[in-house]
Image (cartoon, rainbow, N blue to C red; front, side, top):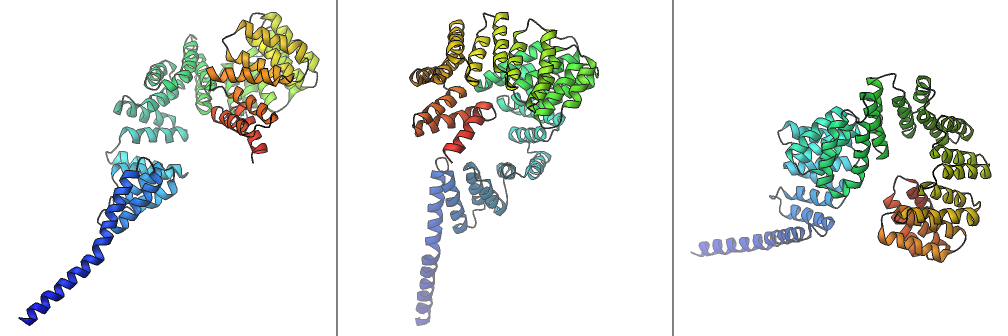
Length: 466
């Protein structure tokens, strides 16, 4: 009997020890898990750490490493996400998709591609998988495969605006008439795309008025250039040149895009000139090529040729005025701008161009630039660019109060105009209002990351806010 009692006592002590040793970590694990679930949407970074802690304390919960990886990815920490996902003994399709995302965001595109392609092979090709594959194929220049995968994505999810948009852009390089419906649908699904798509649609509709396929593809390429879709524009021009190797504009635009992509360009532009030496468009593109390399005298020759071919075009006069001024002859450059206005006196664009010219070169701002800017606003009072330009003129003549009011009024009605943010940033720097200057310069970079206003704002941020 005593032995039995001693056994029961020993067993009870053992159970108590096990309870004291095991239950607190288990309880802590469930507490960590509860905290992780609560933080998943508001603080994914902390949630990832809580899931990781719970996974250590609850080793039978094999799903927690994946949850930690997903949370880390939501916190824009792909390196940590990879660490957690690699530790997961088994990933769900969602986890495998995220594993590819973590590789992609870490710069390992090939690994991401292999993961997503394996998902497709395993019969787990969701819209998200096909959308990601489409983007990688597009990035790698595998456009035919990108078209196929984006098309599947649009069928798997008819509300996927991104896949419709990308499919529309890709189709523009091969079949502009088929691109329109996809782009229209994308704009319907995501109104934020509407302004970009409207410009592309106008370009495609204009391109489709041409009778030849090469001309249509070249027009589509021009629309893609306007949207800064450079690699796709190049593909359209290549397809146009292959369709008709004697179609000069295709070669000229291909040369232009190649220069933008740092892939030469002069060879194609020379080919275009050989095919059609009397094209003002080709002459103008050649001039732009030389301008980008600061070869102003060569550019002037081309612009002069374009102006002779189209003497009634005010655009060539403005281009000539710009390049002549860059060679050092500002008064003669101004005369070209004034001649452009004589050719098109009712166009606010050329009055604005004249006003901006006087500011850029600090030449005749008061006597020529101010009347020109006022005339531009009189002709186009609802165009915010008229007020932006007028503000530049007042700033140049040191009327900072009027300039500031004009730019603030512009942003009140049109908050997404990078030029106004840039100029306000400059103005506030001059007024020693550094906080306001920083905010506006930063906004200019955000709104125009690849454009001239964003670039200038970035340089000023680096200089004044290192």
